Length: 239
Image (cartoon, rainbow, N blue to C red; front, side):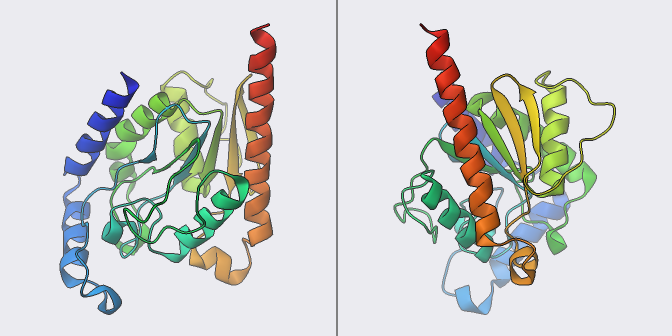
């Protein structure tokens, strides 16, 4: 049942045209292209989730890159952010290979899903509040279908939107004030679920050294530890 809902969500995301500004921008980028990719056909549409439902780890980014996921049609694929993300995922055992270049390149996620709070590449990489609100139902369906043990939010906006959506879904009690985002910050959602914050592996963060490979590896290490703890608790509960 969840598999059918997952495929339906994928179709709904790909067909979405709620945001005229984003629809036009994605298509414009796909038509004009970057010189390095002028011989490639761009995806130019909203980008669906990557991975399978009922996974232990849900990674939440901001939005597709104009010449990354908007080109390739796969989350965090074909750009520097994806290079950093999948290298760390592979090292932590959440992916079968350390790179994601294009669709059908053999990449398979292991007990993990990659998503974004915004499904279309926005101008200047800055979606509006209303555009994120329009995308929120897709994100909330993703949260419900994945039902993760660990949610890894890449960046402050992903952190805030994840908390907002969990409150809307009654997965988290409404906080008196928004929990502060920082790299490595943890927010316990319930006995078996935790939200972890990480700086986004954008070029702005990786080029300046604000995010290092060791820092990104560490949050995945913590995620793996939290998943293992949850599995042990589940095993004890069955005895």
